[in-house]
Amino acid sequence: MSKVHLWLRDEVKEFEKRTALAPQDAARLISENNIEITVERSSTRIFEDAEYEKVGCKLVDSNAWINNAPAAKKDPNTFVLGLKELPPLDGTALFPLNQRHIYFAHCYKRQGDWKDTMKRFVDGDGELLDLEFLNFDNGRRIAAFGVAAGFAGMAVGLIVWANQKLNRPTGQLHPFNHKDDLVDHVRKLLKEAGTPKVMVLGALGRCGKGSVDMAKLAGVEGENLLEWDINETKVGGPFPQMINDVDILVNDIYLSGEVVPFINKDMIEEGDKNGTRRLTVFVDVSCDVSNPHNPFPINNAITTFDKPSRNVLSGSADRKPLDVIAIDHLPSLTPRESSQDFSSQLSRHLVDLSRVDFSTESQPQESDENQRVWL
Image (cartoon, rainbow, N blue to C red; front, top):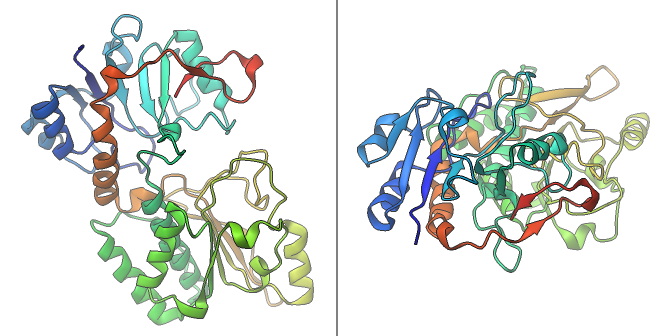
C-alpha cells in the first residue's frame, strides 16, 4: 500500500483562520497511520506552526505547494489539503492546477466562477476531491462545518439586529476564542436591545441545528423562535410570514434544485406600503447568492468579516431598515472549536485515501463542458 502524503496549505482568504487539519489529528495520522504531513507556515491559522512541528509535521513556506507539491500524474499519493479558495484572489492570471486538491471548491452546483475553477484543473491535468460532496452512501456529508456555520450565523444576525435597535453600527467582526465567549457577548447585547422574533429555515439540518442552539443559548426561544423545515415549505413560496411575522430570518437550507423564491423585492415593497413588514435582518447562511435558483433574490452578494452586513433598505421615518448578512466562512467566528470539530470528522477518512478508487468521474451538471471532478 502506497504511503499517503498530506500537504496542508496556508489559507489565503481574508479573515480565514480555520484549518482542515488540527495538530492533534495530524499527530494521530503520523503515529498510527504512517502518513507523511507537510504543513505550510501561516500567520493567520488559529493553531501555531510549532504545534504541528512538535508532532512530526514538516514545515514549509506559505503557498509552497504552488511550485513544490508534486503533480497528480507524477505522485498520485500526495494531496494538497485546504478549505477555501485557491490563489490567486487578486484578479491576476489563473495558473493551471496539476496536483490533487482536497477542499471546498463549490463548483458542482454551478456556483459563481465554477467554470474558471474547473478549467484550471483541466488545463493542468490536476484532480479535485471536493469536500462539498464527500458523502456517505445515504448522501449525508462525512465532514462539515454546518453546525458551526448555523451557530455563528444566528449570532451575527442577533448582533446586527441588536445594533439596529440601539442605533449603533455593526463594525468588523473578530473571532472568539470559545463559543461561550460569543454567547456571552450576544446575551449582553440582547439585554440592552430586547428579544427579537426569529425564524430558522432548514431547522432540522446541521446548519439549522446550530442556529437553533445559538438562539436558545442567547435567550431567544418559545414563541420567539420559529423552526421551519420541509413540512412548512413544501407547499412552495412565496411566504409572506417570512417578512411580516419575524424580525430575523435565518436561511439554513441546502439548495439542490429549482424552487419558487421564498421572498422577493415586490413583497418587501408591499409590506412597507401596508406597514406590515417586520423583517429587518436576513441571514443567508447558505450563501447560494450566485446559484440560478437562489430562493432569496433580495440577496445577490457576499458580505465579509470587516463589513458583515449589507444595507438593502435604509431606515427612515416611514420605513424600517433591512440588512443582509451573507458571510461564506461563518465558522471562522469560532475558528479553534470549528476546526477541531471538522478535523476530527475528516481525519478518520483521510487514512483511506490510499485505498480509494479514483476511476469514477462525475460531470458538473453540464456534460458538454467536459470538466473533470473527482468525488
